[in-house]
Amino acid sequence: MLDSDAVYLTEGTQKKRFELPGWVHAREPYICAPDLAVDAQGAVVVTSNVMPVLWRIEPAKAQVTKHELTLDADTDKDLGFTGLTYAADQGVFFGVSATYGSLWRIDPLLRRAQKIQSSAPLNDACGLTVERVKTRRSVVLCARGGLNARRVHLAPDQRSAYVRSEPCLGVGAEPEIAYVK
Image 1 (tube, one colour):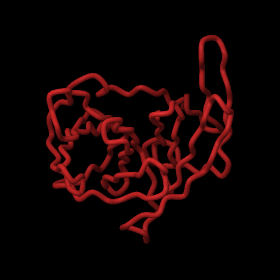
Image 2: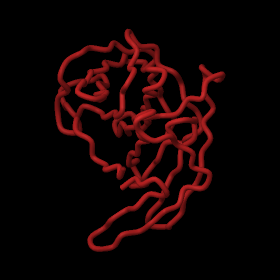
Image 3: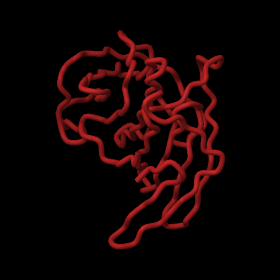
Image 4: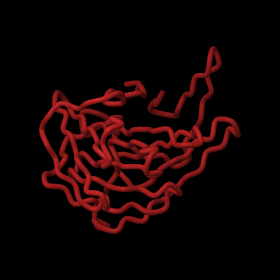
């Protein structure tokens, strides 16, 4: 659970609190909330919604590390991520900025973010998930915001995407993590 001062992870009846050093974020109604995703090792990755920084929490080690991303574009903007998802088959993260409507591919070591050119901006995208449909070879993301959901079809090289206003499919199209207001 993501709260205004820390992340709280619950396992069974135990609840652990993890502070995020230097965590900067804005609250609603000004912008969508920050987001978090779980990586292949079971660590939780948390975004800032106002700057390109991620925090990785390893619950087993009770360790938090801060990762400042190097952006390949939009370096003149105060850009953070309001949606984050881990694509297990590709071994990478995808993030979205509701403020600028931009989509990003983030390497698994949390060092670089590459902007993905999309056919339409993803403004107001307050969440991002991977559609879990086994019969498809390309990546399809679901960008959620307000009452809208858009499917984002990535090109095989993941450098461009086509945005379609249509319902999202498959398990994983719903938010998995709670944010406390």
